[in-house]
Amino acid sequence: MIKLPDASTTSPAERFALDVLVDLACLVPAAPALDVVRVELTEQAPRDLRGWMAAGWGIDVADGAVRVPRALLKTVIDVAGAGAEQRSSERDRYRRVLSTANPLVAEGLEREPVVQRAALALQAAARKAAGRRAFRTVEPWPDGHRWAAAFTHDLDVVSWWPAFTLLRMVELTRKGAFAQVARVVASALGHVGFDPVFQGVTGVLNSEAVAKIRSTWFILCGTPTLQTMRAGDLTYHPESTKARGILAQVRAAGHEIGLHGSFATLDDSHAFEDQRRRLVEIAGAPVHGIRQHYVRIRPGVTESAMAAAGFWYDSTFGFPDRNGFRLGVADVVPRWNNDANQPIAIQEVPFTWMDRALSKYQGIERPEAWSDDALGLAATARDVGGLWVGLWHPNLTSPLGFPDAPAAYARTIAGVLAESPYVAPLDTIVGWRRIRRTVRAAAMEPDGSVAATVMSGPYLPRLEDSAGALAEIAE
Image: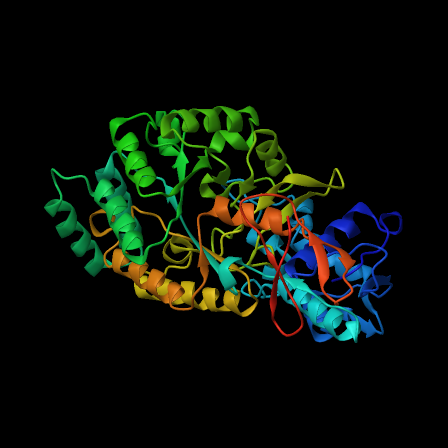
């Protein structure tokens, strides 16, 4: 448990950063009257990320207090709040913020959830500062799990599969991967008269059914034109027989449907609401989440439009050209608007790993290496008790240009599940986290137990004491 500074002594940005750290640390905010560890803010000179790491994040321990540098909170805003990216004006050809504008990339730390490690240091400091005072944390994930994983998919291809095969063959030829080109040609010819896209979706669903997991599928929901097809944006009608068939199959298996925001949403905020409404009608299911196509987002601006359109969460903040922790966290975090100096009413569930980051941008054409990369990042997420989010495209099959890819995805699922994470669709994970954040320590009982409150809902988090014992919270 922990007492935060009075709001009158902190800026909105500092309060946001403190809330992020406390949440990631699983610390329970306590009522002012309780005798528990308090947070005190101190003045220290700014450091780069490696400097903060070497200095133990600048967090000091005193009897009943942990002292946190205000400058560290500024770093949390820059990284987890994407403040540094919001200040950047450089863009690539897809109008994305350059990865090099990210503070983690600038210091070669993109594969480290540095903000989450700072939060764990805060938890350890609070535990030490408590002494004989009562100390509680809230369980990180449901059902006794110590970390979590989510499997997600972007449905980019439904129709015109031979065209995508040809584009992929050109890509492989430019890389000199002629043996793979020959395998793709043979596979494509063998699938003439069949629908390899539907077979790819079925293959992913079968792998997940065997593993008994549910995933999240992001669906494009605009009207394609020749221009959008040439740009690699909208390539299929969501109302088409093929698209409806895929959606029905995904829904029948109990998976979540989210929106894959088209290029138009970057400039037209109303497109979010239009596309969301259209997808709800087609899918016959609620649509709570979104991920931008090609990871195109204007940090701090696009998320505000998403929130206005009624989305609960976004899952765009991963790197397009490398894998890692773009926001320095393996978890669910709120969004921040630098210009407005206030939080945005939407949650971010950043993806950690994407198949095409390796094959398209890093030139790695061995699917087994993609799986190794996924499992390495999953191990890091597990180490900090966080959330690993993987992005697998269901069109990665042999006739569409990706020999051996389906087997690599099955291997990735098995490797992640071997470490016993909590696995659920993203809307379920966000729902859990929203409720967990409402846990508050309200009073100390005569027997030393802690009376806590929590928002009513489908999930009921539990408190953990210093020995790891769990205690139920009364709603």
